[in-house]
Image (cartoon, rainbow, N blue to C red; front, top):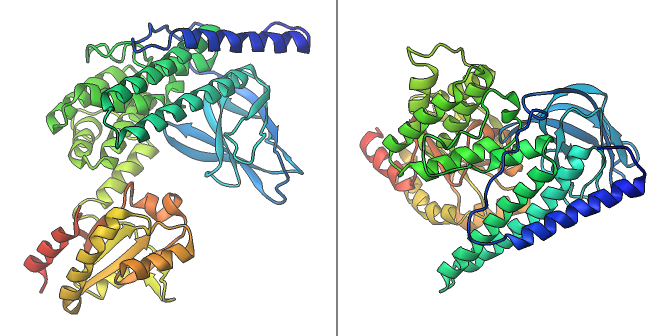
Length: 467
């Protein structure tokens, strides 16, 4: 940006916002917008910045910390922390690669993304206690553009959510679907306007990656993504695109998913092993979370550990493979020790040794499917508890009163434990739980013998195997 007075700079920013709003309103139609590349010689590739990050908060947080997280796809990892002053914070200057990072107030449940990209200073002003609500970038052209885009996209996404909610019980589903499509195209058009106005920024490259140039041909779907660029890993665009790719070109069968996996692996295999491993992890983890463990196994066996695979899995991929193996039939899942509702210390491995089979079930008081399954579980428990069948019920509740009321209302049997941290629970993450209920049936050695989707499967197993 050229130098000038504060009034001139502000006037330029207002003009850009007006251009974006006007252009977006004019082209918000159901027809798919024409896409423009967001990658230029100036923003191509990865850049390392020696950057200072600071900001202000709307009120005081005595004794609390602000955390800085690095992103790798949809996963975030703490890389630094700083104690909050009266209502301000500042991290030590450090070298960071270009891409998205997260600022987290106190923990990772109140975060806002920022962009690091070849700028010496980033200074932000958080105006609300919830960081993502109306943040301002005081210093950093990259983040001024990003915060403006983020605010506009949130408004459109809010409209889309309202339309989807109204569609559930509506007799005008086709009309609502067309309205949703119009709003989705409005987002794409908004992305294009920001790409044109901020073409040399990392934001433009990220927005370009978010939407495929063409969905007509499986062989050209990834042509707009540079898999030699390490900064492609530092945002959520590729995980989102992987999901869209699978929805567009797979019919739901394992074979069609295998074909999509092979195509994407070939596209990503362009000489950067870190990017290739990131893409393989994104696919393998996504399929695992979607209960497509056969596809996860295919990726591991054929593209990571196969005889023709020459790469050595990095830490993230190696840990994922070990964890998946531990959570597979025959594996030994992570052990834990927690105090039960009755005040008894429950060590999972030791407890499993006391019985013939132990069901570890992840549930929550607010889970309707859990409510449907609990009466069945009680019948199975009553039938087999005298023969060595045990239950450890881990709740994803975050409120102790709700947890204990849920135990009573749903008559949850066995040993009831929780960390009261919801989806942020370390045990929930260790077991890769993405929905409730999720269950693992263990033998007396603590090994997994069944991963039932429904409790009646446990009943069938016990009828055939319990002594």
